[in-house]
Image 1 (cartoon, rainbow over the protein chains, first blue to last red):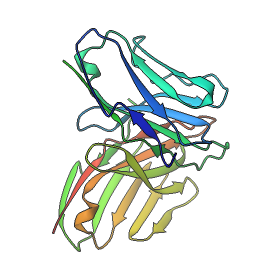
Image 2 (image 1 turned 45 degrees about the horizontal axis):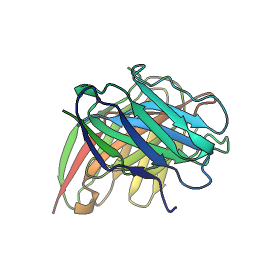
Image 3 (image 1 turned 135 degrees about the vertical axis):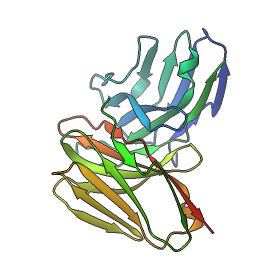
Image 4 (image 1 turned 90 degrees about the horizontal axis):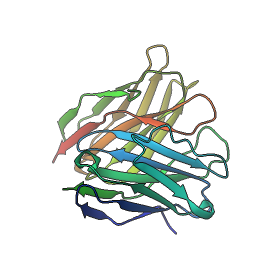
Length: 116
Length: 112
């Protein structure tokens, strides 16, 4: 595709429910990143997938958060037993990741999650 | 928190004026990048400066980097109403990871 796409655009859920957020990276990009942005705040790194390597999960805030990347392309971020503090915009980005340190990350439009 | 800080938090200027935003960070970096965000949605990459560079230009953008002070500035010259957005700096640390650490952002409002 022309850019990174994310779905759904908006998600409203009730506290305690599980949610799944999807990210389709740019075709050919081997690196994929998830970030979280709370209202009026900067981006908080969550998780990073690089090719077939083990993902960098150092930013996941709790064990309720997990992410998968199937077939080296699409990624799903799952939040179990959602809490109100999980409300935020969840942004996905991808990059070519040829190992160069100068690469640009291309961001999707985000999923706005509201936990009631 | 590893998050960098930016100042000012908000900046309001008139069209045609210059806008300067500053970013400070905490760790050694490989490069520093500036991103723009409209309406709380996706970010757009503006410019990247490597740790061994001190200044870089791209169109109306000028970025400086002072690694001794762990700080960077973004200057937008001859601002336009369409430049109204939030601007974030992001640093890539040394090592194998491509993880970016973002600053808290500056909200720029350019009045027509």
